Length: 317
Image (tube, rainbow, N blue to C red; front, side):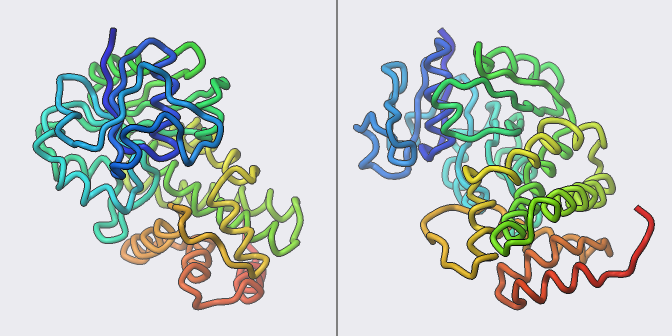
């Protein structure tokens, strides 16, 4: 029986624990909140109960072992977590499940892992997926990205289940940026729908947003085919078209001028600010990202943001 550790008992970490345990793995799930250590219910996934194959712990030391660790903590909390858990994590395969760009360092998860745990093998699990779908056992396909092809193949076979299909890639940069940037575009798509601008406008926004994703990712070393795959276009389509997406719902609230639940993690909000700063450093024009960052920072109104985008000079596609 394979043994897998998961750091982070939020919706996605718990959903992966459920899926992997159903697939026959022995799972150790670390929860930051000690109150969750003895619970079998998942607060973030109503109606979901952890299978017997999942052991929940609040002690980082319990993650120690020879198997891989799926790191499912929010992107902006990843660097502090890695610093805290370095002694337990270093030297192992660490599979980041966060989607975003660190606001302080302007890097993705793999760079944070490499810096904090230099003897670890960084990998990334990303793609079009909602935690509720995974926990319910609905068919889901994800990208497993690892620069070390042999390590990636081993992880692919270890983590795949009959309903969780993993496609392997060595393009960590592309997979990472696809997952991060689509959240920014999803916020913009939510704004479009929340402001009542219609589905045609959303389709245009998604298309131009995908062009922005390529405009940033390719100069940073990503491969175009990766952005056209599950971790880029696939995740973009899902996140921009479903109310299950927290980023989309956050954008809807912005578009409607409504408050949004501050306890809900919206990775795209911090990522928009980080990517806007990164684009400015590199002289790249990302107008949608720039407007989302301004909306998040409350330095522009929705009507002004829409007007600014629609008044841009006409050009060739």
